[in-house]
Length: 319
Image 1 (cartoon, rainbow, N blue to C red):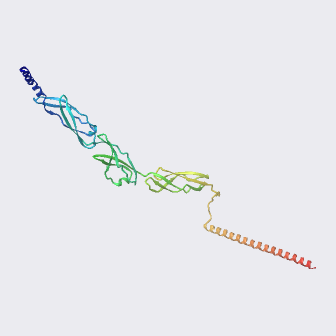
Image 2: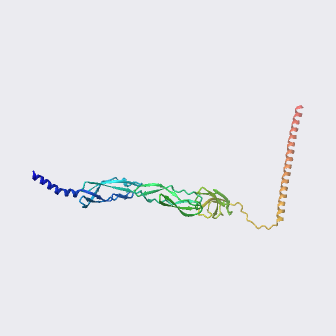
């Protein structure tokens, strides 16, 4: 019995230092880290352990798994990861601070084209990519601009803002495009005579305005009868215009001769022609009167003859 007690006592003497050596007094490591949204946190790999006897030793830390959504939030957040120190029955933890997500890319805006006098319509949102991988359409806050910038042909840029990021919109101001040109469908003329084509066309534009524009026509004289298409273009424009011209043969084939008569002679000729016309009318009236007299005489003679025959017949019957 005495021997057993001595053995137990000696065992305690030798085991106590081992227990003292394994008694953890302090564990040192980075217990709080910060990471950007969308980026996995870098947790400490080792911890320095201080034992009861004052000795120190580094041990690996085995961290428990955690969900990716914890560090992929767009807003700032915080969560805790737990783990254990290898070979020791020691539990530890680390606080992870997640920074708010930042904009990493904004899709470029397509260039904007407007015509002079047209209102400028700017996009309300733009497609944004965040540091955590999210994509969203975010509202654009546009800087003010001078409306006079839309009154002449040029190119200018406007700045807009999405949170702390700047986005640029390029604007091209140009002349309104022609949507329609209105001219008469057809005009008429005769051979050798210049066609009287319209000098102006009613032009409608893409900005819903219209105005009269001068037309520069090609050749307008034709020596043969027929139907032709005459082309022209709008003044200070490359826009083509066309019109149909129907040419009839000129019936007046007399050759013009120089007029040598004095104005007085022209007057006399006119008077002479007028006198002849009056005489002709008088002669025609006289002929009408004669014809009427002759017709009356014939009618009277016919009536007289009938009366004579009737009288003869009565006398014969009375006998």
